[in-house]
Image 1 (cartoon, protein in one colour):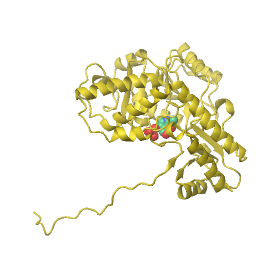
Image 2 (tube, helix red, strand yellow):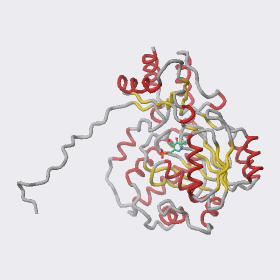
Image 3 (cartoon, protein in one colour):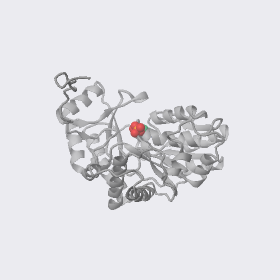
Image 4 (cartoon, helix red, strand yellow):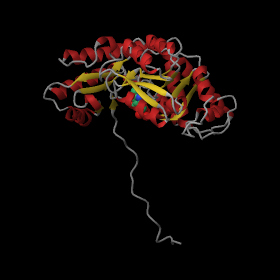
Length: 380
Ligand code: PLP
């Protein structure tokens, strides 16, 4: 026993005072003040009747934002990678073949998750910085006859938007492959139409164009994809992300599986309410308009975009680092001098590009002007 005099002192940690950054990197983006307010409202229990109603609302708002009628539409507890692993880890069964792209960092992550799920991975090639060609995907489908085809709609590592999605999904369906789309950097910011485009499974992140802190990540599956999941011969390796079990909580039963991150569900509800208020198509148009201004600004400085205009990704602008410039130094100077976050390249584009996000609440005229002016100053 310790006496009062001998009490154990706690570490002397001061009040939380993070710097006030402008977030124009690959995510997170600036969080909308209404979302922050929603996060400071009192908790209810995760099985409280009022929370069950909130869950229904979040599912309805997610369907609107994904442009889907899929019943199986939920926020997965965890970051975008949790929604990604819930998709791949449930849809890919041991012995299945999954076709993945090589044109960016997140295609590589798809491959690793598919392998861990017991799948065999085959690849369709395209260089980093370019989208997949429909013919190459069709050839790979014919050669490997995969069970699942995954692609990244908005590649955060390269600033490339995958065009011609309906042609890709049609090719996959011709070979009876289910299509999984990574929509982490497109949801709520770049045109995405899950049902109309024939996407079977899509996962996303809240911290990019939805301007919501990470913690509850959108996922949607068609009935056909969910039928495959529910008919699995072997249960998925992850208990936490087993969609068959999660169905008990997010489906009709509303039975305990794990304690939902209530505050994050509040946050995504408010973030999605903002999407609905703005209108999804107007929101896509705003991203294109504001990122277009950003692009025009950097190009006027003599800088070059990494992606061609046909597949430029408004939410993530990859700008080529000029000769003789140290990209890391530019990013740290922007942070120190302007409290402005942008990012360097990674993987094959390490040292070659700056990644400037224009996402959600960060896609505003004041942010764009600030980012262009600050970058111009630091590069001078
Ligand atoms: N996929 C893409 C395209 C991403 O950009 C990211 C994160 O940046 C992820 C997946 C993984 O999401 P998270 O970092 O939230 O786990």
